[in-house]
Image 1 (cartoon, helix red, strand yellow):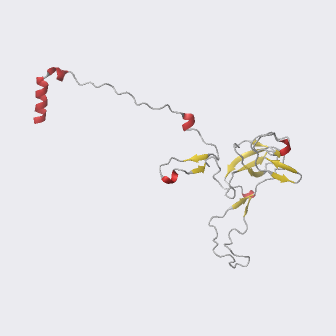
Image 2 (cartoon, one colour):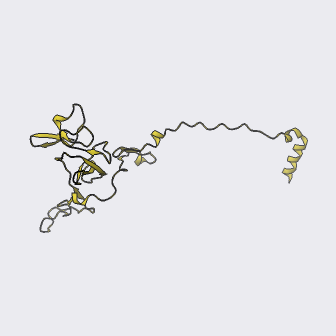
Image 3 (cartoon, rainbow, N blue to C red):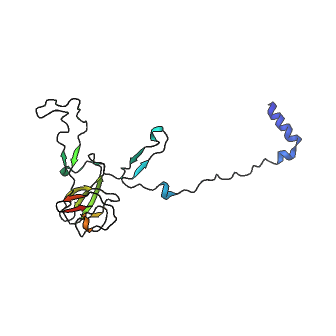
Amino acid sequence: MLRHACLAAQRLANPLRAAAPLSRPPRAPPLMPPLQPARLFAARAVGELKHYKPVTPSLRHRITIDKAGLWRGRPEKSLTQRISGQHQAGRNNTGQITVRGRMAPKHRRQLRIIDFKRDRTDAAEVIRLEYDPNRSGFIALVKYASDGQLSYILAPEELEVGASVRCGPDAPYAPGNAMPLADMPDGIQVHGLADLGSTSAAS
């Protein structure tokens, strides 16, 4: 009550101050840098390096491979086989332990049968990109247009789902195509170099 009485007395003593309300200047909007949607929200390609924000000491120098666009289901059953001797845990054919300290892995890995020779010259379509636990690179499941046969090939960089891949001397230079080294232009990047008898091929 005393405080309200003092405020009322001050207003009566200075009526001009009471009539003119206090007006504050409007606040200026905060200065923010312009957003760059192409840089902040750009989708990463499959196999691109992924950096983490260093919110913890363990994430400061962590770099992983982005696997967002890979197939999340099981591999093609007709193109897989069991790895022999993987779950023997140091035992021989009679069941006796010959190597001490070996433990059988908990997860059973299937070996993907990769077509390294690339003998067929007809076009094939890339169905999906998959992760292979038996190698450091990714693989691609392709389907040949003539008879619908499925095959696994090594997935190079910039290979996308739905692309058409070919093999042979007449194949154009594109990611995923395979041709002899003699038919390749100079100064290009190659992968999957293989010696097929008298000639060498690469993709």
